[in-house]
Picture (spheres, rainbow, N blue to C red):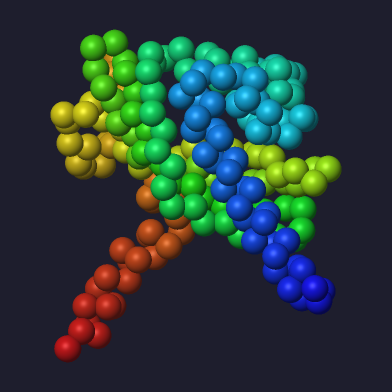
Length: 184
């Protein structure tokens, strides 16, 4: 196999393995398998939500186990994934997800994007960083229209980071008037 073909095959294998992370994440979080969930992340995982000086997979298991206690049952459906290879060991991407949660007597739906950074260590891909960005959250029978799309039971309605967090979103709406003048 020539070097160019080998490189393309390795890139495709990397993308496949990175996509597998998102599917494994959904399965682990819905099964409440904190060990499997933490194993998807780099060993020295850290982000701004970590408590005190806690770092690594054990701290991540603690933080995630506190989050999943907010709902009884959940179902995460992984949709579109956009992956950008930065080099042979690093990548970043966006994973579009619909999650459903049983919260007491309610069934709450959430559409979100995960903004991910990936790193390959010892031949295996891991999450280096994962940031959920909510598009909307609402009780199943409620319609999340309007500016305050995050409507988690017991919390006041709130704004969401997606879609306005994408620079292209504001640019699109700013150009509407310009585009209207171009239509025949």
